[in-house]
Length: 294
Image (cartoon, rainbow, N blue to C red; front, top):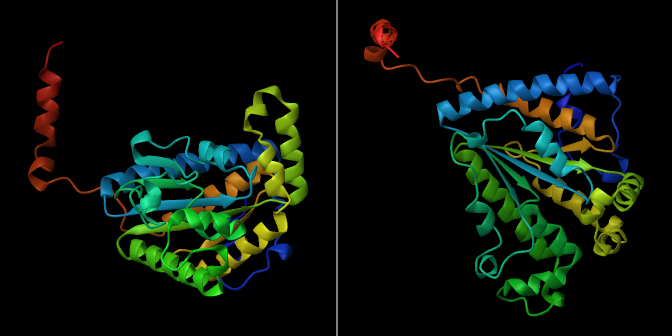
């Protein structure tokens, strides 16, 4: 596969989601795509080992997308060859009562990856400008100053949230967190087919909820909110990538390739040098171990 042209997937100017494709043809067979996926995730796993040893950066990967976009399976496939101690996945659901006693970024901040590790947010702090924007009544649970009813939630409120999120991400980037934000862009028809598969396969029924159909009725509203969020928060230090996701194998490979091709640009990430005194005595240490008897 040719090197992915990031200018076609990275958001560097205002976009209209309705004009962005949800399917990318790689002119590769399914088998070739899966074989290349195996190699790139091995390369990513090797790079993660160096990141862990280097210990000066962390990597935060944010995944957003409509229901059935393939976030869970993407996480499983892309990070399969990582050392388990080097990657942590968090899935954010409805805020708990404890989380609601803090500001909306708190629960995300406390779960950020340590230096040397990857952190994957399956749904992210962007839910606070997506779900709450589609359902502004949820904001009343946050007990915010000046917000007594949904009529108090205006354009300025959302502008302030976008600004807070950008500052949050800038602070993280300035302190060594490498940020990737992926929007898994799915067509409405593909979502319909995937929901039907959930209903038709007994082992997938548990994933289905009648609420999925209610949210589907709000498809256009969600698309507008995603578009607004992406346009307002894609920055040089924390860019958004729009990943065509109607084909899951292609989406996984695109995400893995982007991660690897961007991360290897950090030339300073390497295993630390051994202490000179230890290095000059390596032969002696080998000799000591070789002389040991079972």
